[in-house]
Image (cartoon, rainbow, N blue to C red; front, top):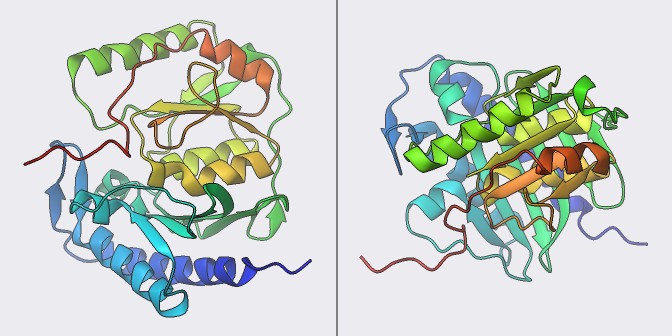
Length: 281
């Protein structure tokens, strides 16, 4: 069977490595930091430069393809996933890490056709780890196959999560209620890389049993989600239904036993969807 998307994936890996070089070089420069939705939702000129680099490179090779990019959406473009071949790009997943030189920064590139993920590429720039997955063909890190943990006891598990960029008191209260519930089970520990894409890759690698978050965006998780499932893991909404990448809610786990136990402890809430209509100015 002809693999019609292999060329696109090869290009994604190549451009992710090139983007990673830009990120590493920028760490030695003065990083101008700006904000978006809040004082803790950061963006830098490097985010914008890397996204432009990726999009321009893809346009030259695949001129009919569509894009969903974090910085493009922040600039006012509509976040809409259609049946067309679509590149879903987070140029720097872990911008706060990048600003503070905390060593988990990723370039994330997902690719969807007919609203179905075909491949995902997550390049952890500072670790020089290239995570990749093709639908139905497994997940890999630096060409070595990945497999999720086989742990089924929640009390023997490590769970990854993040606190997000919202400082709305109700959202913060829900986040810490969930955290308190899960820690009190008890579990072995809670971890967070500061990057949704890397957290998903940690699940795929078997380093943590699960990762959940409310408030992430489709560009944070489009690539890493496929890496999890191709490594043998599962994806769910935090209330247990099918995952909706536009809902800004996700639970990725090694198996249903761990996932079901976490679902009982998560205090869910619903942030505005990524594909919600833009309000008039």
